[in-house]
Length: 89
Figure (cartoon, rainbow, N blue to C red):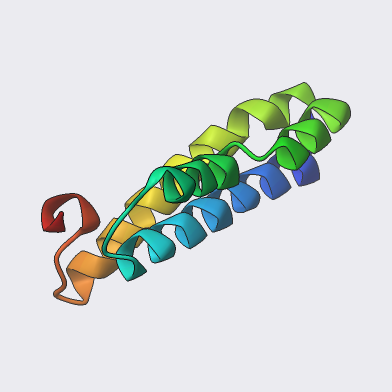
């Protein structure tokens, strides 16, 4: 297990989730294209191809990064006094 590939996987997961949540807050309506875009961003083929090719352990840290990004974004909203995404909709 390489530290750099695992750290890169974690940070990539956090950034991808952060971007997805920003777009979910910005747009008021969702359609099939929007859902496909969100799912495509989370489970991007390029990310998984890179992770599988380099280090199998890094593949399992990517979803952890997604979770950390989600929790961090919600915590930031609570600290700013705004309503979290799950409660707002």
